[in-house]
Length: 326
Length: 290
Image (cartoon, rainbow over all chains, first blue to last red; front, side, top):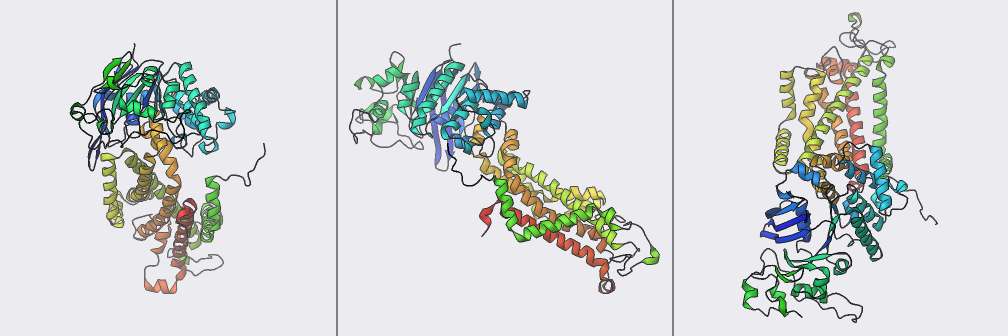
């Protein structure tokens, strides 16, 4: 059992009035037990849709039109709804971006976590469920769990809410955690704490983690491997160390160059020119070529879509000219 | 640590109760209803007469010390009948509204949460039910099923669910898109758990408003059917069938005690229920209040 989750050629489409949007277009991703895989990309690059496909919860009218998602030996895409429900929350759990909206505002937080447990263990009594919740809240560092059990989400601070959300995700000891921008809605001061909590919880429970973010810093800090997405495709993939030290795709290189650095003066951020392509009408060839500094409008970039190819140890890039990057 | 809280936090229910108490018609209506309910509940104790005791020697007697509201065409005590009729009329109104609202809530929630074919099916059926003149349908159904109080409750319920259904479906459509519903699904909740956990509790206050206003309609409807002889069957008294006693002009002109008490009872109760319903609506959803 080498792979926990294997996504192959995943394609997700959203029909719109103007045509079909292919939000995810042939994504491949592997997650092994216990590792943390980062999924980076800007808004609309297909990160979240990829994650929701794994849970079978792509919002209609969007639908998965191709590929396979094999988790623990089963193809999740072919699973009947009842079995898929048994996987959700129990074997694969999700940490949402904004715990304020991901928790029902009119129900006590404790009851919501208890519910997540009892969904998968109907035989568990209310009392036993409550005890388990108190235990979980204590594990994720919520002070005085007994007092907070009956509190509503608005009575929690942002960081506490996200801790409660993490407790909820850990409740059934899942084999895979999907954290969708887990720190985006939080104060900067809290972000590091929550990231650390995700790291230790995942390590202690042995869960693998897919960390979705647009923050390269988060990836560098937490992830073992990283997949960079652009316009619904994985454009670069590899060991975090390898990708960050020597990016082999101009988009990744652009992202890294666009980060604020301590040593550079203010106002010296280097943006990637242009804007992400419309997925209604993606550019032919490499989706990145209109913005690419490397391409200089060369023939292959305009006509042929580059496949993900090995460019080094544990390192793949979907670029026609990966060797031209410094 | 110092507490800087100036006022104790109020629960939404407490806030709604406060808004309700500020509406005078609603409070008056509620008090009146309370009185009616108490009198109806205590009818055997208060009435003083058996509502069905026929005394042909004393028929159509004007109000007197022995019969404060007089006697009807069979010599029965009008006050006793009025109070006992209140039990039937209120019960039918309440139960019918409950059936209609329960039915409508479940269908509406299912339509909103499941969407697709089920949604279309339920909502088109609701349209059909709404577009039929329900009185005609009820008269026909009453004719087929035979008049009885249980029949009234069921038929009223079946004919009046679309109001609650539409309200709940609209709310459910909004709730379905809430992130916490999506999150709850991601934690393995099925659509039925979503309905039970997130939709029904969230729509309950709105449903209570619809249900209350429906009670008034149901009391009226019961009166109409009973007046036509298709509802509550004599000798059991209901406000509607008490009115059948006064069906000609002479009686109406000369013997107001036959029709005035049940007529007023219907009118005032319906008015009171409507006041309470309006007050409840404004209390639950203060945005509508000017």
